[in-house]
Figure 1: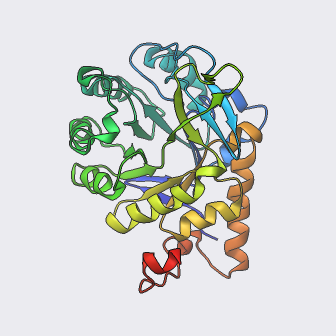
Figure 2 (figure 1 turned 90 degrees about the vertical axis):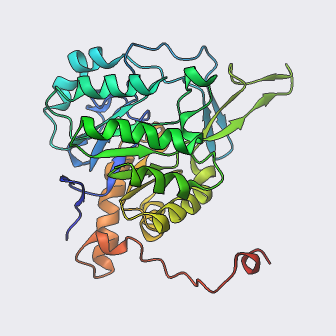
Length: 313
């Protein structure tokens, strides 16, 4: 049974990775799960300098989900190199470093410094960051800016470049096509949706920042639709994210066109969920008499003649 897949020249042992921000830097869970059984680890976001993030309260549980406003808190790229990377180099799985920034130049600076290190196999670029030079608006909601970031980073590395797209746009396919044209090797989606929670007793927002990012099972239908849209628009791999709790959830993403998936919020409930899901996806493929998990990718039996309007009736 073949479980592996490739992005560029990098081969991942299976199609289940852990999403950035939900698994720390990998070493935090080493006593809870065999991380070597993962397709890959995507690290917590890194910026040039350490970031404290937003003040509490910055996590709120919601029905079938979670709101977070962590504010990209991280230890900074140099501390990552000194303190986290030595452990990650010992693992027998692929390491994808997620980069966040407040300017295009910061993205370039962080990636350039990481390029000098051993043990990193690919980069995921978080474009859902505030662009401080443009009044704090997210890079990821500006198609031209998202394309520019990709184009600026592309000459700096030969390693796979994965652009993590926000769902908070009208047509995510436009962004996927733009970064593909600029040289991205893959896209990952969806990042969190903008959400809010209110305390009726105090009449105040529950998050210190008023709004935050919604993740978890509640967003899975939206994530599936966005992944399907992106997969129809580009030829590069699409990594599906959003509310995956089980092997069946993961397989849904593969069927709509995701090359692989990332497990996020579920890691907070069960640190071993991703390893379990990877094994169960393999078992599903075996029972379906497939010799390659990849044969599930894009295998949706969609009735394309059935209009969107009819589907609402």
